[in-house]
Image 1 (cartoon, rainbow, N blue to C red):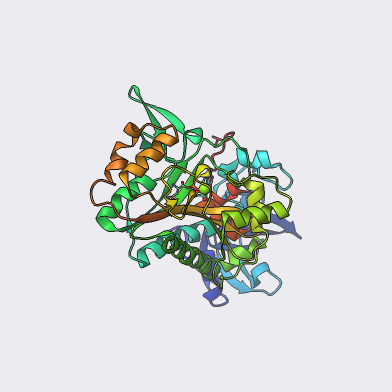
Image 2: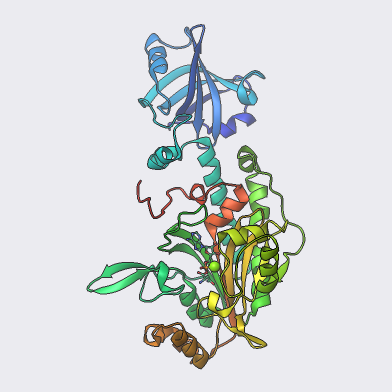
Length: 428
Ligand code: 4AD
Ligand code: MG
């Protein structure tokens, strides 16, 4: 075995205990002939002290020559030293250079684009590792909430034949002489599955040919989506609220050290999320100086203005019909608006969840499809769901990376995913 312990396990050991560690060189320095290596593994980092007398001349030469990010194996005894970072150091008695690393390109001061071009190396840095561990906890908590609440996981295809969220952001791919698209949302497939399982969810990628280069758009993002038979708009919002609170609570509980290292203060959320209508939000945005007409969807800037007004995530409901996709159910009391809700995260982050109640009548759905200039033929199977035991139902989609960006306080969505895809980035 390459190692007897992971670095995080050293805390629990006695002074003088012998350990064998395997990992990478994070930093290196030399003082009075003694080589100090800050060594990291998946779990943390520790100072290794390499001194003449304890090691052969060859081992010392190898240690002196080891570059940043060289992979190494170290054997030695554990010493408690309040002067060492973390209060621990390993006095090396054996050193093996496994894979040298010459001139590791990720250095302080290199530019953002350079880091993105070298993402395959950049993800080794402390900051990226913290962000990605928070991502893992967001994914885990999301999955947990659904399982704990009796939702059944159902996967949907990535290749699809028709748009869910409008033609403007569709990726077209050749498909044996036909056109296929990369899915924008698994919603329609989840809607099919409620007739089997009532409450269903999935967590998988969605794709948007979104040309806007913003801090909150990716062309490929992970989408946690749910669909619930018998639920109305309010029932849907209750589910979203409970899910989002659970995600925050668990991330704070399980990754507080990562949040702290990123300089992020985050606490579990108490209190109900406010619910305001589109009309109220529009007034608020206008008072803050936004130039927007009734009927338009809120863009990044308007959402930012609205979300800055609240300390908690806020639901905005009842958007104008023409601002939303065709499948949304119209408000029977006010047919120019639909029974939908977006959840805007605070601090200017904006939309992290979009959802609502779906049209359950076949005729109504056909007339909305036609009204939007779409072809009902393309939605034949989706219309079938209204023919065989249709039920009132609602659902939503939560953007995993947007949620991570908010919780971790990341300036840009791309750091919420290991290998981001944007209009200008397909490498690495
Ligand atoms: O609001 P959207 O477009 O809604 C839907 O796709 C619905 N069919 C979901 C459903 O009801 N099942 O997308 C849902 C969420 C957004 O709130 C946002 O968090 C995220 O997906 N999202 C994106 N995240 C990153 N980059 C993009 N380009 C995104 N587009 C949407
Ligand atoms: Mg939306």
